[in-house]
Length: 136
Image 1 (cartoon, rainbow, N blue to C red):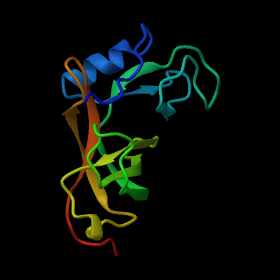
Image 2 (tube, one colour; image 1 turned 180 degrees about the vertical axis):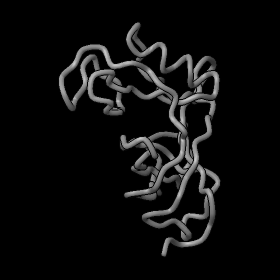
Image 3 (cartoon, rainbow, N blue to C red; image 1 turned 180 degrees about the horizontal axis):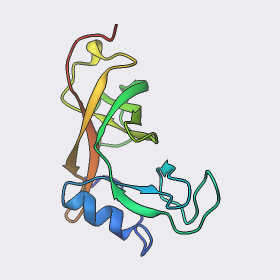
Image 4 (cartoon, rainbow, N blue to C red; image 1 turned 90 degrees about the vertical axis):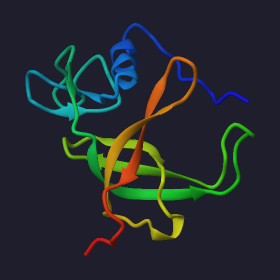
C-alpha cells in the first residue's frame, strides 16, 4: 500500500528537488534575515516578497513529540514518532524520528536530518538522534 503523497506545485518544486538530492531547503528573507519553514510567498516576519531558498544544516532539538501506536493505514507501520523540531536556523519543523528507541526519547534531545523514500519520485526529511543521552 502506498503512503499519502505530498501535493507538489511550481512554488514547492525547488524544495522537493533538494529533498531528492539529500538537502533541506528553508527560506531566508533577504530584507530582514528571518528564516522560515514551511515555504511562503512572503516573509512572515516583515512581509517582504519572495524569500530566497537557502540550505539548512538539518540539525535541531526536539521540542515536542508523540508516539503513534495505531497506524492511519497499512502503509504506515506503527509505532512511529512524530516530533516538532527547532532547527538550528530557527524554524520549527514537524517530522518523524526514525531509528530511535521509543522509551529513550526526550524533549531537548539533539537530532540530525536524513531523507527517506516516500514513493517512486520523492524523498522526505526525517530525523535521527545525534546521541542517546537525556538532555541535562
